[in-house]
Image (tube, rainbow, N blue to C red; front, side, top):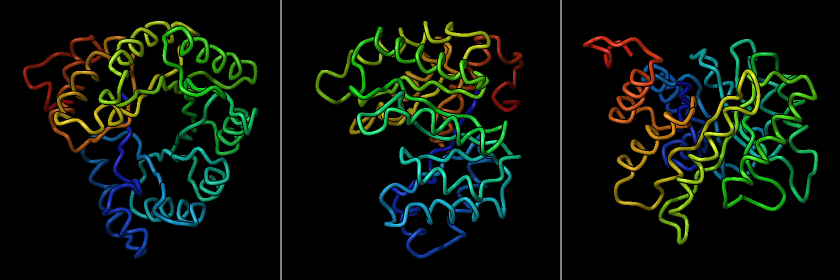
Length: 269
């Protein structure tokens, strides 16, 4: 399971303050601790924590790379912010550009730009592409799959290895009115997305979005993650400090025969 640690994000107060104060230690501690907790990648999201998002993205990347070799996921839907980050990213470690829709009303070629930037960053750098287009986030299974198919087709036509492509079917907060049907639609879409190419693209989700505003965030996240893994999900942006969530990942991987069983499988994982 490719786990992308979510905590270096300007929406969190400790990170926001660290950005404002240029406090490297806070950011570096989060990078090291997430890596030790099992993160395969570290998501880097400036958000609204700084007016200069491009410069702050570069500062965060350089700060982390001083102490940590874990691949980074550069998280912004602004191509200029991603492009700035690539200038200082050590692509030899790998990485992900997170994220792009198929297209936007303001930019029909946005997916092409992200694929171009990934190629510029190096062959170990992938792209997270959202099942979303200029019409917004689809509310049904078929449209999600159709958009995913277009994304995969475009990548293949460009010679972009589908193993560098992560399809994100976009989880929505379950508490939002009329959104409770969406987890089922997403699971049904996953069943089909994993057969769009050979080898299949990765599938990922921003797991915490699902439980926003709920009283049982960790429980909802854990249950859905196990269900999604059974449908082919092989990546997620998660809170790796949630020990129970990490145990669900380990157990799901074992039950799906992706990890060998032992009596101490949780410790082994």
